[in-house]
Image (cartoon, rainbow, N blue to C red; front, side):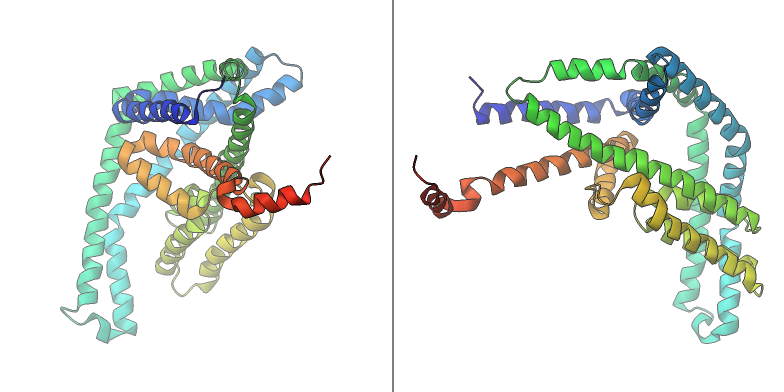
Length: 362
């Protein structure tokens, strides 16, 4: 006999409360495990593909680990130093850029920037704020990254945990499936499949789109000679997972930098605009339709809200789990709406009575 609905809700509620309590109290401790689970989840299809080519699971995991290690070393040696250097220079040069903007506005619109005008004071404050806060952010990030714990976590714990998770991923899924309550196992499997499909579309698909566009933007901006092009391209690519935000932020930053650097050389400014136009064309017509799909069930507004809420409440770990939890909640809400539409609460007694009258008696 199945448990009453009230008891089921009680037990599921306790499980959810325990999960969020662990997330709250053990955020820093479980960070490497959450990162490792995310990486293993993204790489599991690659391991499955290698297995279909004849490798066993251990050999497939070893191949993935070696390739990932090579890529990490290449990126660490070639990209990260330039990225950090450009980011630091961009923060330090912010007041100079603001001064150049003031000079331009004074030449074109002298009335707006009279001595003591509100606009002039605002621009000066913006430049000083960017320099001070940006410098604090960069120094804090560098100091944090150079701490012994973070180095050990990133270089040792995450790869090791990911290796074991990836090697035993299918076995762990089978173990969890065996523990599902038998009365609800078919429904849970269907909901889990929907959640996995949503996550696969978003995390794997959108992550690939971010990587491709970030590489394209950074390479294109550096080829045209834009200063800080690597930083602007990286920002645009990283924010692409929120529709339109990456292009707007990265494009505004890049075009603004191009206006200061190439003023009067309109062909280079047009080249920067063209890079983002081409990127948006490929994203909307080729990359997103083929890698993400037309519908993933994660509205941008809900995604931004989830990232903000979980990030402010649970820190960096909260931001990592925000997307999976939001995807799961979206699937559960859609399932609940399906059940609601099939219930008497939605259809009413009249609909049930008319359905009974339309059914011929045997």
